[in-house]
Image (cartoon, rainbow, N blue to C red; front, side):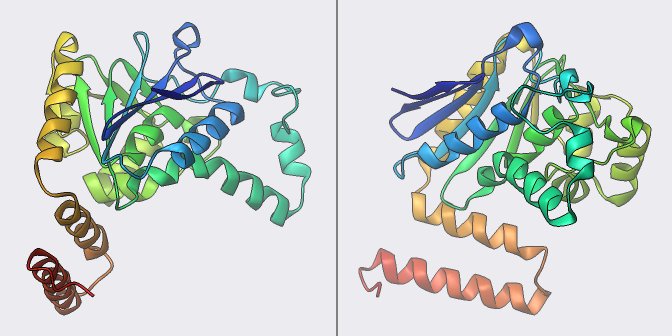
Length: 259
């Protein structure tokens, strides 16, 4: 069932699995504010019955990043140009970037597990979109790069937090400051990718992972995801307490004593 198909983004749902597809291979799935609004809308349309969301892209590239038209004086039709944004007040600029970020924030909701299937280039905003997901399966031709600093900008689409969490501060700084390519083998070795497979096997590997994620009871996965996401911000003792509370909820639910 197709719930959304606009501005280079398609959302389909098959029972408990939703698939969000970037559908502009002619532009290597380059991103724009219209794409970001469509991605944010897709997040709102995902039914509550969905447990796994797969993010994939048509064509040879996952996403080549921000559409170069953004760097022209006129920018995109009907959208503020970079010059317009820079001339706005601090609050206006902050609000605009916050709106763009909404496309990248919903993928880590506790009620779903999101999986990015990455082939070819994932550059800049494309890299950050892959980082927005919980898990990443990559084709062996995948290449990640954070090119924002080479353009005089910073990664501002929520990618810095997960990048540091996955590879550590020093490597994250080196990747962002140099803008170099991280190839599939290094991505798997450093934790950026959960799995690397031949390109022809990418769809099958994603399907296998989705099936494995669906095998466990939903509430147990939700509680486990919440525990792991919160662990970074808790002390050891706080995490122990969170584990006890979560397990108490699961035990009561399993024996029918939930509040």
